[in-house]
Each structure stands twice: as C-alpha cells, then as structure tokens.
Length: 480
Image 1 (cartoon, rainbow, N blue to C red):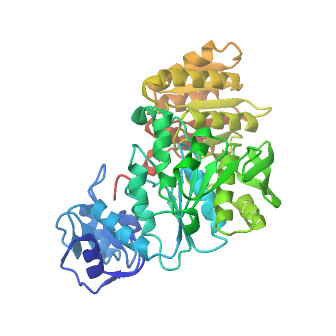
Image 2 (image 1 turned 60 degrees about the vertical axis):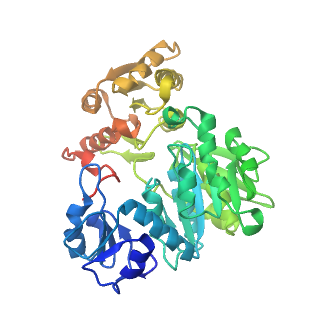
Image 3 (image 1 turned 90 degrees about the vertical axis):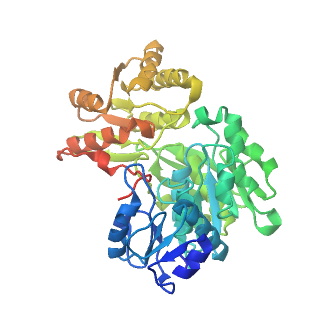
C-alpha cells in the first residue's frame, strides 16, 4: 500500500485512534489473516465464518502490525470504526486515486481467475503488476487487492464477481478500471439472477464503468459469445473483439491440442501473428489466453512479447486443471475449485484428450446455484459425459444424483456409472476401482468439497499419510 500515517488513515475512514501514535506509518499492506502479518502492516479485524479477527489483534501486533483496524475495542493500538470492511473500501478508494497504475477489470461466468493469472504474468514483463490473489474477487477481495498496490505498481489486474445487479458497479466505484475484459455469460448463479440475460446485465456493468475511448478506455469483448459481443453498445470505450471468430480483432487461429491437454495456436492481430503454446491445460484456455493477449496488447505490449509470455505462463491459482502424475501411475486432474455446466463440459473435453488410449474416470460433484433447472442440468451433464466417452462416471452427493440417470439413459454410453452419497464414499470407491494408467478428473462446485477427494486421492496414490486436506481449503471468509 502507499505509505500512510495512522492519522491519515483514520481521517480517510472516519475512525478514532485509540492508544495509537498518529504519526506511525503503515508501510506494508492491509492484512486480515494474522498469520500473514509482517512488520509495517495494518491488521484488519473482521468477524469471519468461524472466528473473530478481533481475537487475534494482539498476535497481529506482536507480528509487526502497526495497528488494528477494528470494529470494537482491542487491547492494542487501533483505529476504531463502525464497520471494518466498509472502512477498507473507503481506504482503497482513496489509495486508488493516488495510484499511477493502469487498472484492468476482468469478469465472466467462468474463466475469470485463469485469465487474470495469465494476464498478470504477461504484464509482469512490462512492469510491476499486482493482481487479485486466487479468486478473492468480492466486496472484501476487491479493495484488499487495490491496497496491495503501491507507488511502483504499473498494472493493477482486478477480478470482479457478481451475485446480483449492481455488485460490479459497486466494485468499479472503489477503483475504476481503464481497461476491461468480459469472457462469457454462462449458467453460474442462475438461481440468483434468474436468466442469462440478467447475468449479462450484471457483467456488462464492468464495461459501463470504463472511460471513453478518447480518455484511454478499452473494452475487450469475447467475439464468440453473442451476449458479450452485444455489450459493445453499453460502453463509450474503444471496443476490441477477441476470440476464435474470423472477424475478431485479436484471434486464435490453427488451434491444436496435444495429448497432455495443452493448446497451441497462432495469435493474430492486424499486421502480425505469433505462435503460442500454452502451459495451462484444456482447450477452453485458448479463449482465456486470447482475451488476456488483447488486454496486454491494448496496454502497449508488442505481439511477440505477449505470445512468448503466454507460452511461459502457468496456472497460479489452486484446483484449476492441476495435474498430478502419482507414484501409482495414475493421473489426477484436480479441477475442483468450482463448476457450472459450461466449465464441466470444458473439463470433460480436456479429460477425453488427456486420456486417449487410457481409461478415463470422472468424479463429479454437484453444480450449485442453477435454479429450477438444476436437476435437468445435472441430467444433461450425465448425458454429455456419456457421449464424451468417459469410462467410469461417479456422481457424488444427493444433488448430483441426476448425473447418473442422465448418463444411464444415453444409449451410446458403454462405461460404468454410479452414485455415491459423499466424498468419503467416493474415495472408498476409487480405492477399489482405480488401476495404473487411469486418468481421473475431479470436479464440482465449492459446496461439494470435491478438492477433498482430489487431495486425499493424490496423497494415497503417492503413498503419503492421509491428512485432513480440508484444512487447506482457501476460505477467505474466516481468519486466524
């Protein structure tokens, strides 16, 4: 964060200094996890889903925090406010106005985090870059990311999410993006929005927040998604289309995918083309990479440098097409961070490619928040899995049960299909049926906790002691 005194911070957030030296300077970041506090930080004490950050105020100061931004009295130097989360929102808004960085927003129903990770790695070659950690893209994660930037930051890559109309608009008023990329409009959170058109309305708030073309605003829109392409009418920024469509301004041509699931293509822009060979897995990453490329090109990077950086970029966030070649000779694909119908189909396509000539096993949990069509969507997923040639399909949990009926009704299916009640039962069944050479995909929504299956399966196949891998879950709602 830009260095500020406690008195300056208190003035910005409307807080009251308690037992604190107003001239002490916060030279580090604003951190809500006391385990990550280092000297010079400001500790944000907020109630979490399991613990209250105020209980760790003393530990944070002992670790070097200058003070605590608190919602109630604590026995250490503090800035007391009515609402700590609202306070860092105001602090981030003030800091954003002082930054000289180019802010770039990214949104979409799926692929946001992978695209953000690719773009951040590409832009790092052009200057100091700060990006959203993991998928920390909500009303807490957005200002938290802004406050990671300082005077040296040249690019600030901000992932934005929405669970309702107005959510993205709220985030962009904290730190307004100059550039934005919209990936797709899918089925994620249909239960909350009601329709894909409503999701498009919410996602389009990002391009509405951009400055006009004459002021440097650029909207990168996925040319392959009609609902995204239509957002061109909602912005005064310069519109750049990106994708695989022949008329896209920045596009991927001659796409191929190798047996490891890695895509290669020619990245094409008016007047030039360059070869890209992605390290991340899955053909769906081509769309993510092209959107990232278009944003980097709009930031002034030359085409060859963008292509080289994309070819070197790796997956940076957990449980997204993470491939483990285990000691038992079984390949495990951990894509368990989240799931919706579109991302499930993309993962199954990657599984089919990576398991060519080998037995494929798909362990699928529920897809949450699909609304009244939930059962039909799971049934359709089962049919799709059967048609894709999955050798063994295991559906996990009650809400995932229709996957089995869908697969069983698809006459082209020649594989085995079964249902198990929970993750423990899934692990037990896998222990019985897996054999060397198998390729296993594990995927489901966060609420299904499918990462537990993937992590414990990898531990067992590598001969490691079983541990409660659920302790490693990236839960940004709590503190310790």
